[in-house]
Amino acid sequence: MSELEAQRRMTAALVAYDPTEAALIPRVKTVTASGAASYTDGTPRASQRFKLSLLNYDQRPDVTLAGGVVRKADYHLIGPHDMAIEIGDHWTDADGTRYDVTGFTEGWGYMRKAFVVRTLKGEKVVPAL
Image (tube, rainbow, N blue to C red):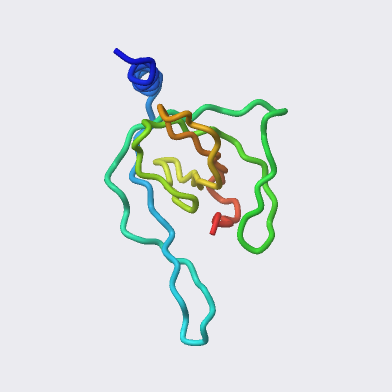
């Protein structure tokens, strides 16, 4: 077994230990009649399993969302290297909390690792795109 295969197996084990499962909803760019760009929800992706890892207070980068709103990233989303995920993808859990994918960090070929902003139920939702 190569080192890359071993790392991919360790990522799978990390996800399996504390999984989150969700069908990510992509944001699709459309152009209005006036020529302006607009983003709408696309067809949800197939359900996927991944791990949400809470970032420490000193690891949370600022993320600029739509309309110039600045928030702190809350989580790293860690998934398999071939996970279908893009900036702007989002999902809402059973409690009504929304999660938005806002950027990526290094995955070294054995994982996909993204920054996620959380919006609690009742808070104003500002999408990543």
